[in-house]
Image (tube, rainbow, N blue to C red; front, side, top):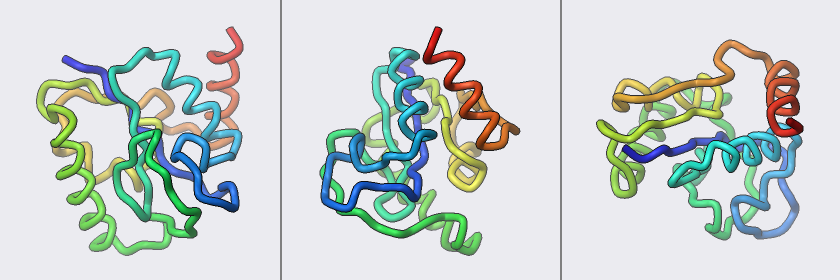
Length: 138
C-alpha cells in the first residue's frame, strides 16, 4: 500500500510558467507541501482546478480557475478526469490517500477511494495554517 498525498491548488501564483511545486505561492500551499514531504509519501500530486492532476515537476502556466466557481456537474466532470489520471499512477482500492484539500476538491473523488484521511477536515484556513505551522516547526 503506497501513501499518496493530494494537495489542492491555490489562487496565489507566480506570474510566469513554473514547475507546479513552485507555481503556487500562498503560505497555505507552501505549508501543505512541506507537511506532505514530512509524511514521506511515495507520491505527491496537486489537484489543479484547470489541469486536473499535476505532478510536482510538471511545468504549468499561471491560470485563474477555481472549483469554487464551478457547478456540481462541472466539478463531477473534473473529478472523473482526475480519477482517470490518478488510476494510472496509483491503486485507488489499495493505496492510502491523504487529502490536503478542501471539500470541493475531494467530494467526488472520495467515493472512489477506499483508504483515505483528511487531517484538517473541518478546519478553516487560519486553523489549517496554525495546524501546519505547529507540525512543520516541530
